[in-house]
Length: 115
Image 1 (cartoon, rainbow, N blue to C red):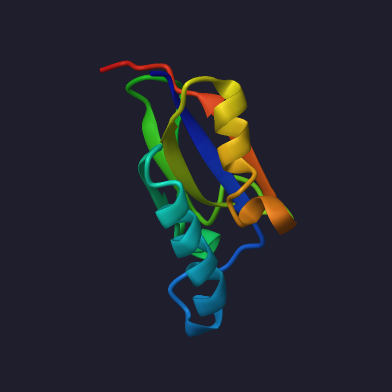
Image 2: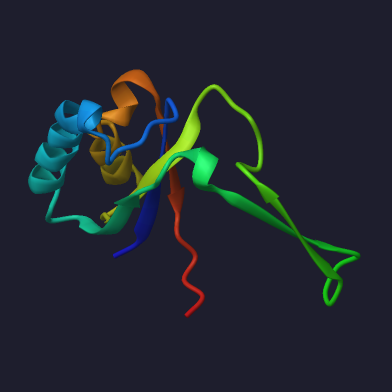
């Protein structure tokens, strides 16, 4: 069966903070309800913890790092699920049940296996 990644965009939050307990409970309920198709996933720490990596001049060049996210946006990449669904329609229906879809966005993309 094909796999899809459901990429979660919400306000930039620290999912480990006690203020997020109610939201995390919603994600837990989703995880239980969609357990048959979830193959993996994770919540991400806030973008303030990010390090952006670039290689100047291409392969073999100097490694440059910048603290913080790649881009400043209203909504941040805050997590993802890997879903194994029969088709895109099932993946979209599943993604619509992810709490981020209610006040943020969930991008669904097919996974291209490389390993």
